[in-house]
Amino acid sequence: MDYFRKVVQWLLYSSSNPEKLSLTLKAVIPFLVLFNIGDVDTLGNTFDAVINFTVMTGTWVAGAMTLFGAVRKLWYTVAPR
Image (cartoon, rainbow, N blue to C red; front, side):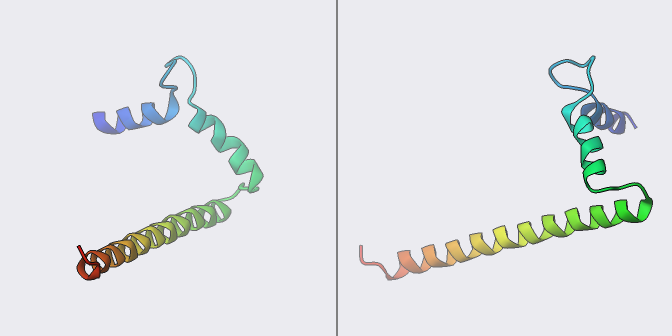
């Protein structure tokens, strides 16, 4: 439970000045207003979109790293030394 409290405090309070709210928390309000999030369904859809974007980005990064590794391995195998 102490770990959960530390995570919540880390999200809520500024690292440079613990007396102030964090920028992360301050940025949530305009984000919610920007996307007109007022009900639970819209909020759920927004979280789904963020999760899908994160998964898609991770997939692209992993694919790029795999392709880079395969090309590099092929280059070092075939290229004369």
